[in-house]
Length: 540
Image (cartoon, rainbow, N blue to C red; front, side):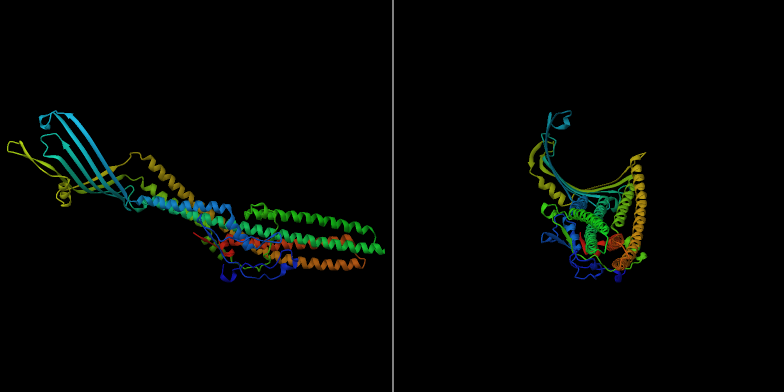
């Protein structure tokens, strides 16, 4: 919609109980400041004031929207879902958390000798070990490891050169998938899905906000219409009573037959019934609005609600092409479907690559060291002494890069049938195709909704103009019928019939005015601009 066609919401124009002539008044007043809605469960919105004066709740349409957004229980529930979706993204990011591992062990072993080369009839070994390592997943899908291992061996074998002996090793290892699970997309699959689901939750929250605003607006204008309807019924009763009083005077002076009093009395009774129905309609409209505003305490629930915002507003002109383009860009339902489809395509791509064979590259490079008490032997091999040593000797060999070692290899694996991966891939592809159809269905539904809303806006505008003309003509017809009645050319029955026509015309005008307001809300909702129209922003 172009800038020139934007509509500002009118401010309060006085109590709804004013005469129906207020329908022709030009609305005025400043626009209520914008309301900001947060998706955070702990966020506190600025409290919308509930104005109670003279035992009544005075309420403008902007206050109704603000109260509904602040108090609506459905929005509160939706906020928790939005927060959970954010935390799921953080949870998925945990795949990149640096892993720290450590271990310690000890063992004692005794075994009978099976050979003279074992150095003892009963061989005894005491082992102790300690290891420390770090592991990190890489965006490519590979895994890098750093490991530092240490061990101690003490034995009673006379052939042990170092006793006790200490060993130490420092290794860098790397494992990289080359086919299945290769690349960032496969590695960050859960992260991508969590982010997209978080975006879906955001759009769902927007939809809930829009629905809350729309229900509050419609309920407000229904109450306005019900109160205007009561005013119309009261004016109709006043006209009937005035006719009855005139008839009574004419009967008393003998210029009118007493039978005419029965017609005017019946007219009064009929209009009193209409007032009863109108009051019941007001009660129903108030209850719906109280429910939407979550006025759950008994005190406020029993108070009547008096709308203050003037129903009359200037019509707007819209372009169907612009409305359709705006809706396709702004509707949260379409955004949600697009994001959901992107998520389905990510899943399809992930499961598609799972059908590939497994081929992994594994590489290790490191350094080793050994230390301990060295046994000194003579030429005949007899132990003649000990050269003291320890774990620091092994560590010096590692830091000195004295004894390097490496390994490199490929590992291949492939299920011969691979039914699980193939089935998952096919299901994901079907879900993606189904999502494209669903997106197209939603797009067409949005376009149909926009066309209906644009047409409804034009129809409501014409109905307003026609209803105003009908009221004017009905008033003129009543004046003419009164003059005929004064000259004895009409009857009370005809006067009441013309009064009924005027009442019906005024009721149609009330319906047309409130109907235009509701259609205006529906139009802005259909193009995805309702929140901007009512001055509501969402802080995510």
